[in-house]
Image (cartoon, rainbow over all chains, first blue to last red; front, side, top):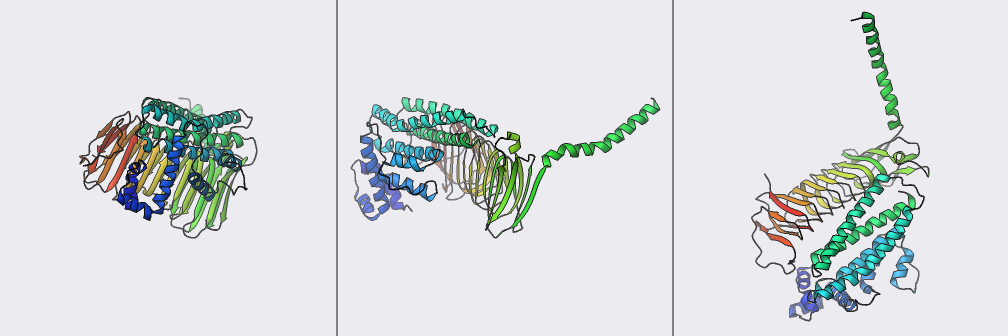
Length: 222
Length: 292
């Protein structure tokens, strides 16, 4: 449970990450394991942001662990074997496709959001844009591949038992696509606009959920 | 007027009068072709799950410690199952054949539950209507609209295109949709989170002390109604749309650093600012209007 001290500290976290560390903040970090953990995660995210030009993005282990714990708790994934592969193929192996689409995209979105968060506020527009694009790249490319899978299943001979619901899903997917295009345009024009990026992240999340539902329908006709 | 014709005509009307109810019964018969009524005795706080692909789901609370399920479906290609497992009752429409028409899938339910029941409803299309149930509730639909009345507890509602209306709801409410409109009327909730992409949002309820009211859409209008005696801190932001405010707000002494220079924002405090109201839209209009 965050305390008032946590809230005060988190309000000055941006300055903290830039090296401005007040005695009160230092005292709070010594006492509060939660804020220490948050700082560790942020440090990893900042380190990842520095490497954002690299195509392969690995989320911080803490983020993956908490996501994994959450998914296990909700019964969405089972205890995987002692896989030696990285977190991406391990997750791909144990999750059913629609859950994978939602959960994996949620994780990527979380990383993308973190990468493009207020820590980077002072860097210039070009870097903002580059950072946003590279952070969103895995999300958009994965959405495209899920989309292709969904289109392929739509062509399968499985009858659509509930055309009203399916039509609604397609109609809303078109709405979200339009909304994504407009948000992307805003982000392109004003890369520092966190509000627009927040909406873009929301739109991607909604698209991932819709695709997961369409993909489920393609599988069993309902 | 020809008498014989008149008699004949009268006889025909009488015959029609006798035949009509029979004919109506015959035509109505398919709709009631399969009817299920089941009763389950339950303990306090039972959990009721309902899974129905298409149709009307009506749930009403009553004073009995019992769940009554009345289901109607026209087709023999689906069956309705209601089973009790401990203090949980699972109600489900099941498809019996691989290839059936969309209409065959339809089943309508009228369910009575104790008022402290917890509900989990999944209904893709049709409608969901729940009244007087005070337990926690989770409703998920695709195209079906959702109407709640006098509900309480932790209410989570998710639709894709279905609209949502909550009348006199209390407790905690989280609702999300993509194109559905959201209407929150005479609400007494301490935590409201409502999000839709293109639908309108109307909030006309109380702002409880320490309550949090967060309404967000992409386009469409967000309308919030207040009384002069209400007490809240307001942040209303629209990136490309307008923000209209009729509340006499006290501006903050230190505007927060996170305020975006790219958006239209109104913020301030009404009276003691006991509740927190956050409204945001991408290109929709936000209206904060005084109640008549």
